[in-house]
Image 1 (cartoon, rainbow, N blue to C red):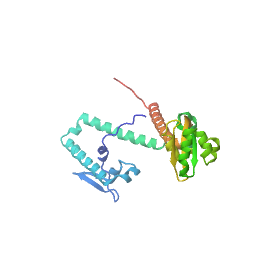
Image 2 (cartoon, rainbow, N blue to C red):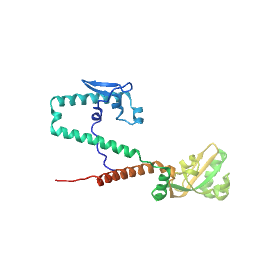
Image 3 (cartoon, rainbow, N blue to C red):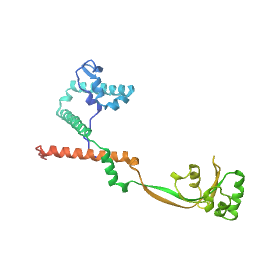
Image 4 (spheres, one colour):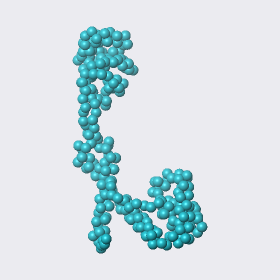
Length: 265
C-alpha cells in the first residue's frame, strides 16, 4: 500500500474558527477560541459520526481543550513564532491539504461487479479449498433389537456380510458400500461419527430415522474451487488496494510532469 501522508493529532484539525450559524453551534470554548460542532464532525465520515458515542465526543472535546490551552500558552510565550515551530505548522498544513486531496481522489474509485468477476476468472487457481472425503460402509436398522445381532455378525463374518443380511436400505444389497461421501452430502450425525473413527472401525448411531452402523475404509483430500460468492469480499479488498495504489502513483506522476522540481543537497 502506498504511503499516505500522515495526519497530525486529531486536535490540530479542530483549531479552526468556523463562523457560527443556527446549525453550527459552539460545543466548547477556551478563552476566545471556539470549537464548533462542524469542526468536531469534520474528523469523522457520515457513517462514523452516526456511531460516535457521547463519551467519545466528550473525550475528543477534552483533547481539544488541552490542545487549545497548550497552543495558546505557546503563543503567549512566543514559542509559536519561532522558525522551528512555524516550519512544523507549515508541514502540518501541507499534510492536511494533501490528505484531503487524496481522500477526494480515492473516493472516486469505482469497482464494479464485472471488475470483481473478471479478477476471479483470471485468478481461479488461487482460490482452491481442500475438503476431506470418506469411503463409507453403512448398515441401517429400523429396530434397536436388531443391533446386537448385526454387531455379532460383523465380528463373526465381515461388515459386508452383515450388511447383506441385516441392512434395511437399498445399499445393504451392495454390502453397505456408499462410495466416497463428503460433509455436504452425508447426514451430519453420521459425518460427525465417521470423522472421529479410526479406519476400519465401526460405531452405531441412533437417529430419529433408526439406527446406523457406520465405518470407513478409505479417505482422501479433494481440491475444489471456491465460488465467486465465497471470495467476493476478499477480491474487493485486493482490487481496492490496487486501485488506491494506482490512483496515488498516477496523481504523483501527473503532478511531477507539470511541476518544476529541483533538489539541492
